[in-house]
Length: 144
Image (cartoon, rainbow, N blue to C red; front, top):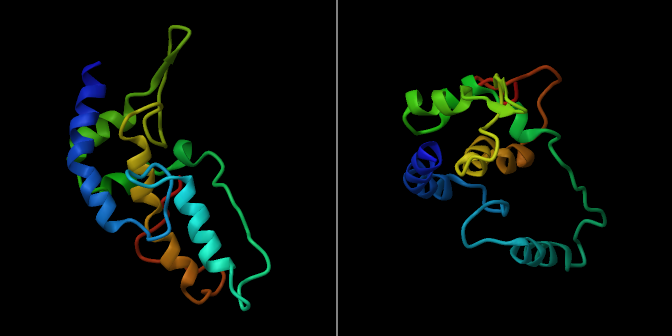
């Protein structure tokens, strides 16, 4: 219970930062945004004579499970010591402790915001010209 309360407290500080850095067309797990907002944006960009004829929908399989702890510790603007403890806490199932080496806390109040902070910038990346195969930015990979 104490961990959830601490996550809620840290979330209150982190959420305004996440909202100011979020991609313009990011709708999941965001305050004051919902699926209807995403549908409205789709209508706006697809309801033109020169709009795309196809829509590509994707899913990052195991996104919450595979985010790199090292990347989060280096890039999420919060207390790294506290974040490290949450990330490495693991989970208990059938009285067995399972350590976590990647991903955000299972069922954690702060997990969706952490994932959104990690995914911020994908919209700008999508709009950039393609780089040669094998090229990677200086920030490194956010997936483990």
